[in-house]
Length: 221
Image 1 (cartoon, rainbow, N blue to C red):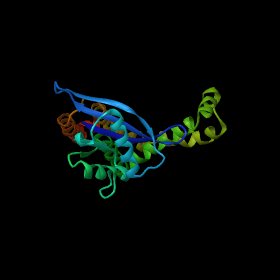
Image 2: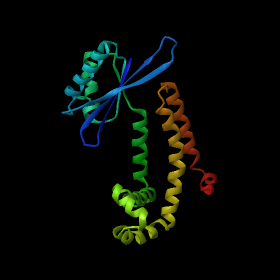
Image 3: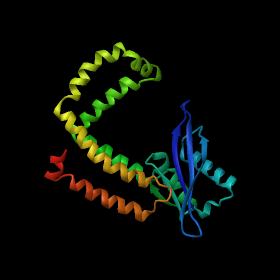
Image 4: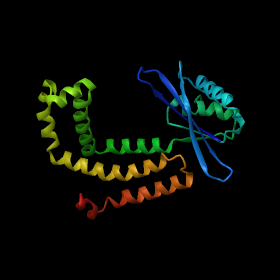
């Protein structure tokens, strides 16, 4: 079996370890189940490894039977020297460590967006609009009822920014690229996705994105 680990924070800003188990059944069908959330008083590799051991012990699963482990790129999890994945692999060399495919896709999109000024500016404009409206539930309620002074002051500048051709084109480009990537992301989030399927998705997505570079696709924007 494999373990799928992530870290998150609850509403009180306390660190939580998200734990899931993935395995292949006797009929060769892939299965994945969420196990639970576990509070973390510390976020170091040794502490996290002990939590994993404790969870497996409670479930009656042997650490030596782990054949895979999946995390995001956090150093405490994936660090080559002292990351949790490295420590686990020392106890079980068969526990192959895989970087979360969906997280990898997300990182690629972030870096790609940062490299293009037009796209970066368009996304920043959207982010500013979002912040004005959704800064808090109270502000959102006030905004819905009739607007707020601070938002009203910023609105003209944001409207002017959103009306610029570069902003509009940047958003159209984002929609074309992100729509294709979202389809792949949904597949990668599936409980039954396999390495073969993920590879096919990556190749297909690359071909799709390359096709967007053509004059024909640009004219369709």
